[in-house]
Image 1 (cartoon, helix red, strand yellow):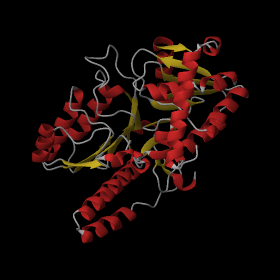
Image 2 (cartoon, rainbow, N blue to C red):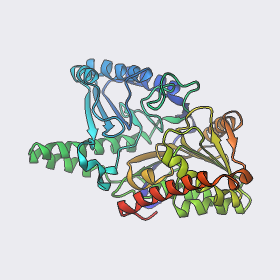
Image 3 (cartoon, rainbow, N blue to C red):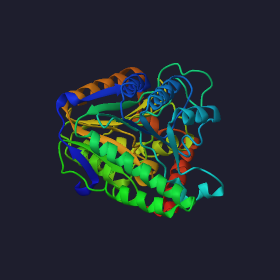
Length: 398
């Protein structure tokens, strides 16, 4: 992967798989409450309802006892914080930046579709968290009134050791770049130049190892998460299991899945059955026919909303992170995934996913799919065309 990867060796017991916000927030709050020096948090969505408020309270407690607390939220996913919470966090000493605020008609320009979609947290440069889970209660969803009947399905990793350093460096670099923009807007050019120098110091990457933090951005790491998937799938011998909320991969990744299935690898995709957004769900269904014709098994998750972005290959390789397999994540957004050769963790994740397949999902029947009505076919084709048009407007190739 060359310069795409920030890797390091890790002892086998340094990483722990966390399922859902219930497990993640408990572990994160425990670490924040023990923090002595610094807490950094990045999230696409920060909701202050339900258990999300518990995370906010922990951040404020840390800041009030003198810990430096830095929070970055996305300008679309979160926007400006609710006024009461913004005031309380500011009074406590929590520093908050909004990445690329969505203001005015400029948001509709393709250049403004580049979002901060990472979900990272680093505490005291000693413990870190990476995954797909927003600061959003498992049982709350902005598209549903009341509570969900079952928790959202999503994953994160908690880890210690050398891998924490590149995670911290990536977060420090992003904070510095946001400070640059803020200083330039206020005409504080000397501060902006200093921040740029500080950011540049974080660009050197360690040598490759067994466990990797793989980043995606629009400068140095444009296709590295996709390449990590393609390399693992291309080397698979017997089993590929992918769970992804928004699935509309480019030709090369689709071809890797098809070729794996054709050479006898069991390839299973766990995708959304209960969807939040009509367009990506319908566009994904347009791809089902060709994939199933190659032997790929497709399952749709109906127990609740699927928000996972994970995969397991041959029971040893896994990835857990923020990146969907769609144009938004693979071409535009800032993303972070942990990629590991770790049989113990891979087994734990594989067990959780196969349970979700068995108890919360339905396999898509190829014959039923091919015989679906003209209206469904039309909706799928139109959604696919709209997504492809969006990609074209960004000037990217997919």
